[in-house]
Image (cartoon, rainbow, N blue to C red; front, top):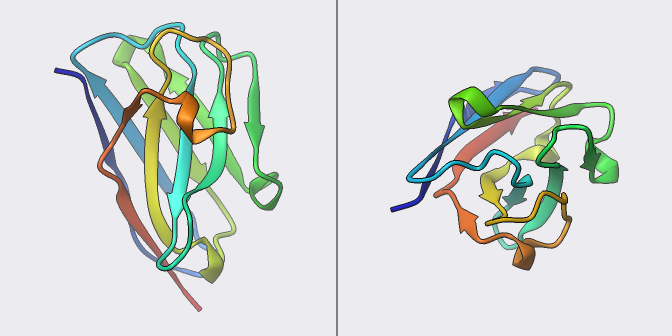
Length: 125
C-alpha cells in the first residue's frame, strides 16, 4: 500500500520558518514528479510547488517564489518543503502529492496519483 506521510507542520510567528517533510512508502518515487499543495479553511486547494523526477526542475506559485524551496532525497524516498518568511496568509493544511510514473512537474492537482493526509501550518501575526 502506497502511503505519503507529511510532518513538520505547526505554529510559527510571521517571519518565521518551517520545514515540511513527506516520506513515501509502499513504492519508490524515484523519477516521479512530486508536488506540494495547500488548502486554507473555506478555500480551494491551491498549488504550492513541484519538483521533477530528476530534481532539475522546480516551479512555484507566484506568492511562494523566493520564500519556499522544494528538495528531494531519493535515497530516503523523501521530498521536503522549506518555508521561510512565513505570512499569516500561508496558514493552511499542506499536502504532499506524487505522480505515479511521470517525471514532469505539474501545477494541476488532478495530475497527481497519490496524496498524503496533510499537515497543519499556522502562522500567527
